[in-house]
Each structure stands twice: as C-alpha cells, then as structure tokens.
Length: 97
Image (cartoon, rainbow, N blue to C red):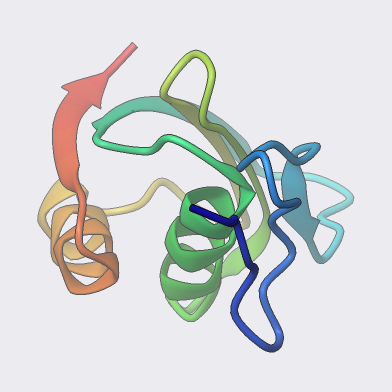
C-alpha cells in the first residue's frame, strides 16, 4: 500500500504537517476550542478554512496532534456558528478550552 496526498492537500505521505494558520488580527478576542477527529494537516486545513470563513475571524491555528483550534477574531464568536463550521469540515466541536 502506498501513501499519496490529494492534489492541493498539504498533507505529507505520512499524514503529518505543521499547523494551519490564516490571516492576522491585530486586536480582539482569542478563543481556544477542542475539536475531535483531526488526524493530519489536511484535517487542520479543512477546519481552518471553514472557521476562517466566519465573519470577523482573522486567524485560525489548528493542531491535529492536540485537537486544539485557536481562533483570533474581532469580537467573541457564537459557539453555534463555530460548531456549524467545524461540522461542515467533517469534525466535531467538543467545546471551549
């Protein structure tokens, strides 16, 4: 069996990758969430992309190894909106840390 990455995927053949981060927020709110089911860089990217699409989100850092997702936003986010984004990515929001 050989390992392959999907076109456009940032996963390495062994499924590892650094953290996924997008954007930059100068001031605001930082919230850390626990997300279950992430196992690789592709997972990090999928979660980051969905959460980044939420209005007011400036940056997202997802770490599959810990399941932690750090979100910087201009204002506090509605947990149900974040939950919907994580669900759309195919993972489960366990809650805030």
